Length: 166
Image 1 (cartoon, one colour):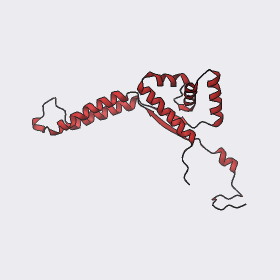
Image 2: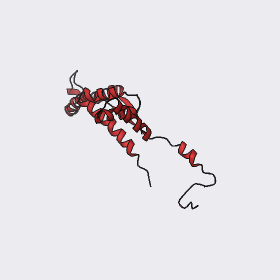
Image 3: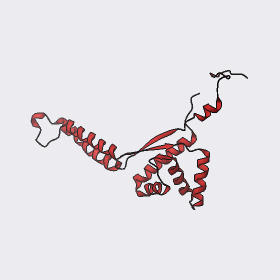
Image 4: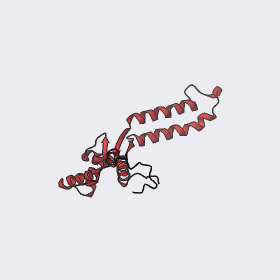
């Protein structure tokens, strides 16, 4: 047996143990429920910074914000946004899980959209979503639909497999 290009000793290499040691790829998707509100607040504060930079300390009124104060407000809003963010751990489904999940969705009378929701829910490891919660997220608002699309994209990315260096 040729081992050309191999870095493994055929006498000691245990392929079964190697296969058992494989770890499914996972990625984390950050979902920001306050994204629209966050963007509007930050844009409002950022619009005030150029004017605040032009005011000298001697000309600044008592209630006029300094650029540093405005930047601190942005940081506080970012912290608020991060506190409301959920980080969803999404894992790569096995073929058996895809088949079982699709069958369960079909047995429940789901159409193609419904099957997608079931697959997304199955791939979300932490926090664990139900298919109904995935659909509720998607249907809540345009922002919810974007978050659903983020999860759907993560599942699709993982299903195609991560790039392997050659």
